[in-house]
Length: 266
Length: 222
Image (cartoon, rainbow over the protein chains, first blue to last red):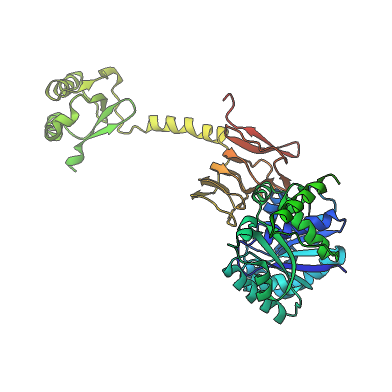
């Protein structure tokens, strides 16, 4: 029985989908069998980020409505053997499925895969309830902005009241030079406010925009700073103890950069 | 009906002057003048093919022609030999129609319903039709169209199109710029190749050949 991990944030645009795509790809790179489940019915993006949009024939709603079998809706990734995508429907809305149906679906998927990564829509309504229905682990994505942290706090409360204890935190889009200048929200302060375990810190990386538009997750690119951060997160998800990248001193950052380059030769 | 005593009827060649058989000649002259006088300038230079509807003697004929030409400045193309007694022009119309209809049946195939849409079809929108679909605008990625007939996009086709949903492989999907997410005709599904972005400068259509969907320009020699 695999793990069902929901990736959520409350606020939109903080990088849930990018994080889902990268963590999923990273786990597949580590040899795990992974399915990415897009729960954002009506505003699906995960297929675009994965570059699999033009392969969609059936979707999640078709599976739940019994129009097709689960296997028919699963799209095999074009690069990685054991990575699959279950796309959301685009012409329906969140009310097309119920949390009970999602629970059943994720259970079935978890029997076949090591990891089921659920990309949660923004907001706290039906879509959120659907996405967390079958999860047994949760990751909260936020950015170093007061509004995103406020929403993350609200989401953590909702997750815990829905039985998802110990959500883990990913802080996305941290601008290294701003942190160094002290102009950006301090990561320690954020962890302090949200009071959950920090899973990883993703530096702001222009390459993410490139990779998202190309449909190739940044984690597969050894030059990408964000890709390196996602690789560390994946190792932590699998239970390894990886030290955090040092972002607060210049030497630390340079050292980290050198390490990132060193990674490429492997 | 006095007003309808003389009628000018337009055809492709020019005007016919329809006369009533029961009218006597002086009455005709009177009615003709009455009809033409108020709108002299309108009829000036008009091409009159011939009279119709009444048998006239050569003398009467020439007198009427003289009135039209000299007093009202009209051109008269016909002559006494081609004078036709019948009131109706239907012979010719009939001929034209019988010529057209088989052409329509032979050369222009798909008759039936079509859904016309003006504007952009956006992501998440689903257009369904029991006939064909014609879009005067763009179809964006994430938009769906399902037609029992064909799909024609007079703009950029970037979405998913499904023609021949009832299994008709003779349907097609055509667009000014065909850069679709996915194409389906009947139960055949295809998508553009991965990798490099393909883009054509000419309008294209997707059709089924040997069980495969192929895309080709529909305007040859361009």
